[in-house]
Length: 146
Image (cartoon, rainbow, N blue to C red; front, side):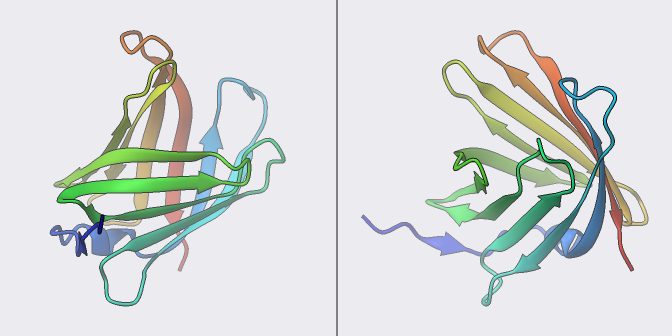
């Protein structure tokens, strides 16, 4: 079965392009500084956006995410250095990017807000083990690197 991919409709995706410094916090690592770098770029053809994240902290996995419209649904496929793969449903409306994964035993949702000048993005990941009760997971800020 072939999966058709087309370019995401929103012009907002252009805002994500480039290099970003990461500053994050995680409840499992409350006293630790979590820093790193993230890049976003189009795959040739502008149909898929590739996001690569590298963290300086040894307990944070490096990751790659691929965003695009697949089977008529905007989605993201996430892969990390632990060999984890997850698929998220994505929306990008106005200056707010959201992605959600509902899975038995471990659901996640991520909300990222882009600043008016497009140089800062702040986000929060939440997780749910029962699909009902949500708890804070990763808090993250991206600052554009010029």
